Image 1 (tube, rainbow, N blue to C red):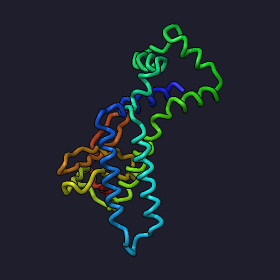
Image 2: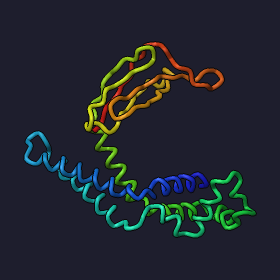
Image 3: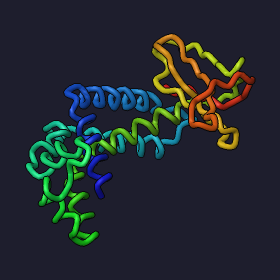
Image 4: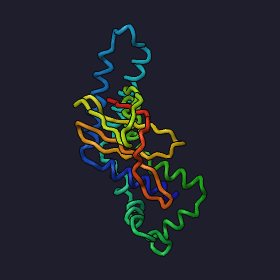
Amino acid sequence: HHFAFVTLFEIAEAGGRSDLKSEMFKELDRYKSQFQSYRGNPSVSEDVLNAVLDEINTCYQGLNVQGSRISNCISDNEWLSALRNRASIPGGTCSFDLPAYHHWQHRTVSDRQKNIARWAEPIRSLHAVINLLLRLMRKGGSPQRVMTQNGQYQQNLPQGRFQLMRVFMDPSAGLIPEISGNRMMAWVRLMRLDYDGNLQHVKEDTSFEMELCG
């Protein structure tokens, strides 16, 4: 359960950004307007459309109810706050430094799971919104097969149309895509681990599947 706490602390830190909720509201509003424009389109199922809009509204309401920042679920709890401060220090969660944590670790698995579920409850609305936005974004993409030249590939990005690029590699090829870019262009550089575990640039021409999602 130690790694569950570390994950919880990382999520709380990322969710502590003051602009996070406003950005999520903006994206939910954008998708809501987009799907509402499909009303009356004979090629769009009204049942599916209503289900998506209901899910967007549910996420919007859940995020709106959450008045405080996500990080407050940790900072407002003295025990969790102390654990977070010590967890970032190598060996900082030893029993003599955090006896209460050591005692908690010897509780039953069921008790610990219930505690973690309760402490993680404030981030459920965040999870629901992120899960929905990523799902809608990914469904808006069209996969295409592309070919690298000397192990590299570059893709022009029409401004304002795409927010996510997905790369699908054949696991058996043992290739690792190294992705970089800016608002106008994205680059994919194929790498492979050598015997010593170092990344080496692959210069052979290789095809892979790519998807631009908006």
